[in-house]
Image (cartoon, rainbow, N blue to C red; front, side, top):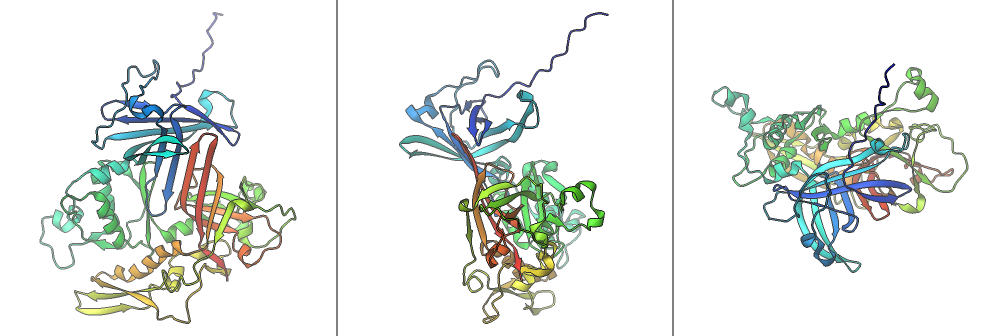
Length: 494
């Protein structure tokens, strides 16, 4: 038999990177600043100080900043040396034309596999657009800060294109004359068309996680305005199919539009134990939605066994790999004592129906009770014995704001409830904690929290369960890869 040479597996060529050791793990961080002229700058070990990422529930975009050491004016005078990998690349310069970008790739060795190059687990690999630059000094070190945001923002924040909801108005597209009430279109469809039009990408929409809703809107972008204002105006009119507020997110290169109610509904499924799979029966795990980000357990040095028959205390099973958080590294903050007087006052919609020439007072909407019903809290663990995590102001129930709406659409009756629903996130019980770096614990997702404590007071009793993530700040730098999470609890025991 002829000797057949042995095939060799060649690992893919590695990008130039900085190795950061944190929490006992080596992370490969590649960061390139580049522009549309082909100029690039690699942030090497001498220039890279740290990178900070932030996700917030008020925006779908991932934002952040990269800190570059500017000793001896390195950001303007240093050359790029990438060896023979990419050929000749000149130094990186700023031209002020708004076309400067940043590619960040973070990878770590996959612990389950053989340690070699092609087993790196990619944590993040994205291109961002640079939106600002500042020079500063910290700890006697000159720094240049580049602020960045998701690359899709370049299209939505910079392009000036004519756009109107008339583009998708079926009556206008047929060339017919509009009749009264026919100018408006579905808000979800309008937002979808706007995003596709400005990004010129038909795949930018995640159709499986997009709810057009029942709200309607008529809007034309004023001359000289970008798409961001149009997004805000459309979202003001959005009412989901299940009569709740909407959340616009951007994951995996696509936009999702889902209701707050559906977000709560899908996080947890209380499966009949007789229908458990073998794996669920073995580990006692529940069915969780794709908006589940992870689980944390608060360590208290209380080694006594804690048994409970409550759902909220046994959601992830006995063998789940929790993220440990020491009791000293988490800060709980209760809601403001006058929250229902200040930020959570009743939002009463007073509608003037132009078509019928009559006033309609939606007095039964826009209060804490309707927010509770519109949020499907009963679908969370122990939902039948829990309630919304704030008490109703029954002593002074006449404290309210009035929203005057000139519209003949029935969906406007929910505007008050939706406004109060979104204000709720800033008024509920908050938890703020630090943990090992984890970008996946992103805003608008849920994490499960539990606590090792045998004897619980009233506050500790409401800790176990799902918490809604409102902010994630993740920092990677010299010997550091850490995340700061802010989250709120939607429900509590009655």
